[in-house]
Length: 272
Image: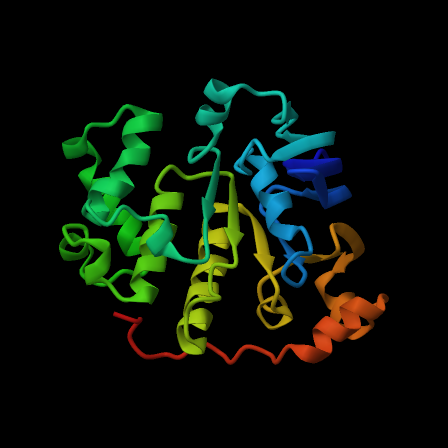
């Protein structure tokens, strides 16, 4: 079966004056429809640069895509112009980041920001899109979604802001969600809630997820497969069970040993 997303021999450099940083070196990976792939590695391993390359979100310059191919549903993404990319970003492929405050506009109510994706990709007016915005917030576990839609980002807690980002990403029902360190800035209880929510939404909508993380503790109960990156290269890839039972690479073993297992999600009301 053809993967939904396939990255083949991707090499990405950053030209920094007279120096060249080799951020990604010959990386290949794929994700099937409805699958969750976790890409794990420490800071500087190339995992986020790889993820951002899918939608060409790395800054050019200094970023240079040296070689490789990225196909989504058989369509080459690296050769798409900006118009073609805009038709994919936020529609078929959506992305959430570590810190919602860097992604949310502090001057706009969150409901308006969520509705912008519907206006851009579906041509839906603000008024007609309001029910879908409320539904997306509710599905993301935001309590009192009608009230929250009319609030500004600074009026919400960190956990609720991340849920707003999830609602914004999923309101167009994308086929692939890229989640770049989505729980790192949250406390451990809220981390567990957000991860549980992502698993539930992935199963409900048969959506593929590319989860970028440095923390092996978030992987076991979320991912189907794991790709481990170090210094811009893939050093190991496996189904999630074998990579926990018997990791083959010394770097994977050290990552696993250094990371505590995430506690189960609390059953109390979501972070508000």
